[in-house]
Length: 124
Figure 1 (spheres, rainbow, N blue to C red):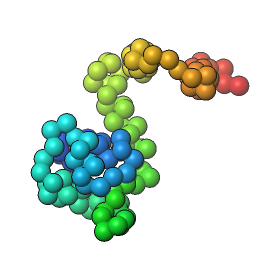
Figure 2: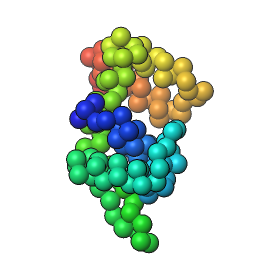
Figure 3: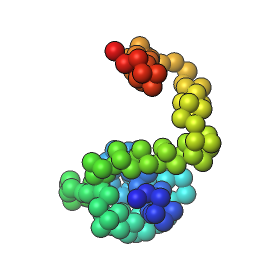
């Protein structure tokens, strides 16, 4: 569904997902080229109406959160990224991501090794 969102709605949704949760002001602060405060609130309202986000009230402020299906949206976005920039190769994307890391902790290395083993059909 994220592909069908207008650019500004997608930007706001992605900013909220990266924050985990946040007020309209926090979301606006996370945007590279933010629209006005009222525009961000309007975009958040549209995303809520589409069922992509929800909110709760905290100290008279709305705190927005992605709904649980955000994981599926993240997977779709990742697939789009792999198709667009890595010619559909998950291995090329993974190699590029690993090249960005200065160091991985042992748990991350183990998780990566398990994913590689699974891809080879050698899952333990």
